Length: 106
Image (tube, rainbow, N blue to C red):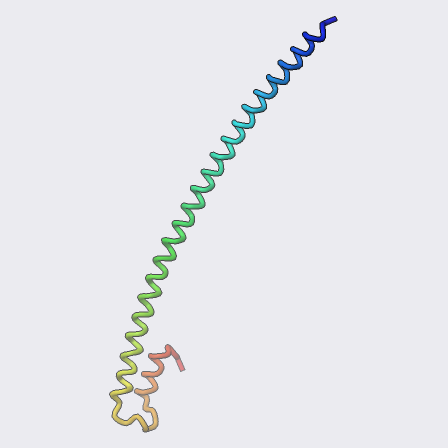
């Protein structure tokens, strides 16, 4: 029968070996998770940068449309100010001017 010291040494070696093995497994798993998180972060950042670029382009178009609409409205307002008889019943020209201003089809 093996001695108590021998059994204690075997148990200690088994515990040390399993601890080292467990630590190596933990480190390998941690590295795999960190690399997966880094890849997901890069993908998300790329998607966010693309969305920001699209938003910038859309905003620039919107600003350009607002500037064009403002210029068009000012031109129509200037036509109305230049009208010599503002108290008369609106003519077809005046109604067309209002339709152009408000984009109405009626």
